[in-house]
Length: 619
Image 1 (cartoon, helix red, strand yellow):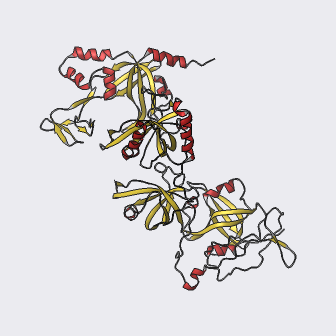
Image 2 (spheres, helix red, strand yellow; image 1 turned 135 degrees about the vertical axis):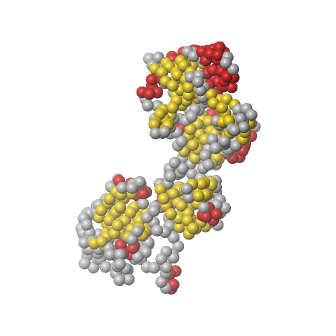
């Protein structure tokens, strides 16, 4: 039976039509080489052809063969965008009418100078070809008794009445059409999204080669579950930072789309919106119940055990314990707060969650009060960061959100399980056990460190080695350190003597009469497979030698060689368990693997025997 494509469908779209839902044929499909998988189509209305792009959510139509060369499709949602000097149709949604047929008509590339006024839409019949009757369109009888397929389309495009009496209009004067977040792509010239703010980041200031600046971001969620991050810089921050409120619904338009930086952006979207001076952010006065308040993708705690380090996850569990809040010092010298708590779920595992900064005094304080009163609340964590420093744990970052006893099916199921049986069921920790040991301890021999190339990946390797310390360098075993305290932590930076014989710290910008001494031990360790050099800093050095660096330095400086020698010799050739951090570092232009001692334990033969027995496979 013959099939008709929509006459002048291509020129109508190029002239601004977004309503006629034309029937067109796919003449060619090409995969575009870019950072994101995208397909370019060549569309035909039997007279004209035009290049088109399909939104990424339609990629599966091509992969599964639902759309292929020769397919007749009906365009349901589409826009026309200007890319450089050309117009491209962006297809947001379409329906396959006929999977495949011969080329219809004799189409040629549309000349963009042609307009609808010079080439008006007609109701005539376009060229025809005969195809098998495998479609679901309703046949229509013509005067010559030939049946043709007339798809259920809207009437041919006519300018909306609101613009009829306004004379000529400026380009892009009409309001942008609201589209799903999932359909956003850089090929769209004009767009708008209606979405709820689910998270708002802190205002951050930075300094680079271009000078000082400020930036903040917020996350959007729409009614179809699409998520995307929006970022503002400098003057745009001043316009929108106070306007944006978490939980409210906004219509946002006139921003630019750029590839998302996945090391900072955990959302499931390849793009990120950057607002500009011309961008608009309008609050919707009426609540839209079709847009959820939040969207989670919870991972069972047992799956966190195999999650990649630094990956961002959602997790939900019952809070079984909360530690007091303690102050800690960051690497930049600033003081912050830290609080640790434990979560357990039905997977039979528990995990340590570390709260940082304001989370400690806000949600952390409330959780501690609930646990102290005998209540075990359910806690949902949105965008927590996985850490593998000691087993596996989860920590908060600036984009993390915490929800105590949320109203969700997952929370209800978890609460029901905990109240029935969960509170009496022991869970295995994937972080630390109660004695501070590691459930995920990785044992290696000295030779395996080199043979397996440990430390040469992007992140450090943490292993435990049973070995003996066979030699300690005694010429430079410590360094002079700043004794001043920043917050509740010692500065520890290296100090030098100034011209007036006082010690000076460049970091603290202060002078003092006496300095401190901290270990910087270079030790040779060996086992039955080989030997290697390791570095032990202050705490590990004290565990190895049994005295402080200041005491040992005093023995050497006072010439007490006997006592000094006894301290060194007594630490050699005893069996120890060394917790090692192995990481490749650059020294000048040379790459070297650095092995640092994080912890030293004298070998407990009873525990070690149990470990060896566990290595014997069961029959």
